[in-house]
Picture 1: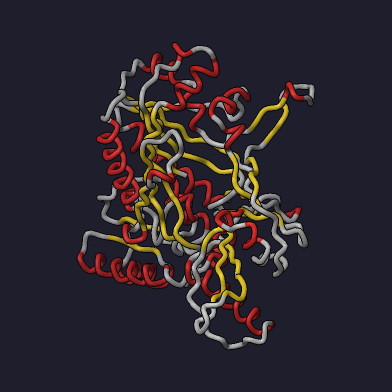
Picture 2: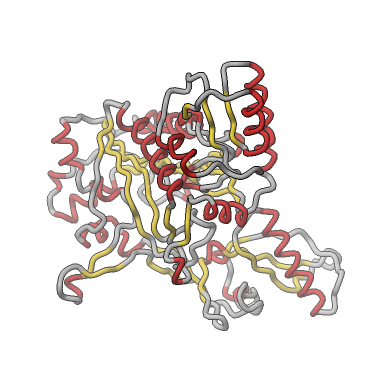
Length: 456
């Protein structure tokens, strides 16, 4: 594409939002999913975030739309056709874009940099550049206006990052907030067991299992490609080069038996050197105060939800709200990911946009759940997500958290595969009850059924 406009040209576009009814509106189009889950965009910025441009000639508009991927939309039918043509081209490009392209572009144009880059960086942490911080702010502002400012039944909150450690004991995070981890005994590398997928190599002629392949989570095409490469190498070493084998049947390592784990190769060593999966707590531990002993231990919050639950009475009383009502929060969360990957999608420091919506007990939760599913879809479409890249993953009973009544994830087809983008869960009365019992102040946590809307 043609050179990107210089920063002084972009600054007024990023900083000023006007109604999309302007004579000239611009949608700043980046290579698909450029900011991955942060921006929740694919081919273009949302139409609701349209910025006014000075008058442009038709030839300039066509040049921008076709070469620089800057879509200029006017009230004229001819310009609509130009934008549609450019949009179609961008949609086609989505299928070909790679994560390396996206990461390179984000750094080159000032959206996202590796944190501490002059010291060779630090895995799982990122800094947002001049354009990235503006884009990030616009997304948060749009969400806040849609979910809080324009609603009479939702209020805001900004809770602290460090809570009393008893909060995490009551919520279950100290005992159960963990991911399954495996170690490679030869390379000393660590992996999340549910992000490593294995499959037997079964010969097509004899149905004999001659070995195993193990690949890291990714899109289907990349996983199959990597598995085929491993299978080819294994069959050649076993004097069975070229032998046909059945299609791979991938399962994650948490489903592997002890016998299978003794045969599954490690991605690091290529040999069966992986340990059995074990739990790894994801909370960052710190110390508060002058002493560094057990009494000073605290944790950086791994989610924003608990700050809402422990402030339930304060938020409801001071805002004079009545059930049903919601509390929204945007803030930092920290998770000590075993293997941060896929750019900013799975990082160790990130921001969440979340609502806890409190409702009366009983079966009324079903209607509220459906309503928030519809509200969430409308919001995601309004900020520019393409509906054909979104799916709804309804959790079955055996995959629900022990306290949940229902949960639906909005997934998005990223270049690295389909992953969760947003969750809408009916959480029951677990959280308020747990904090009421843990604090000994149940009168401060009236027990109501509630569910939350989480976006990150």
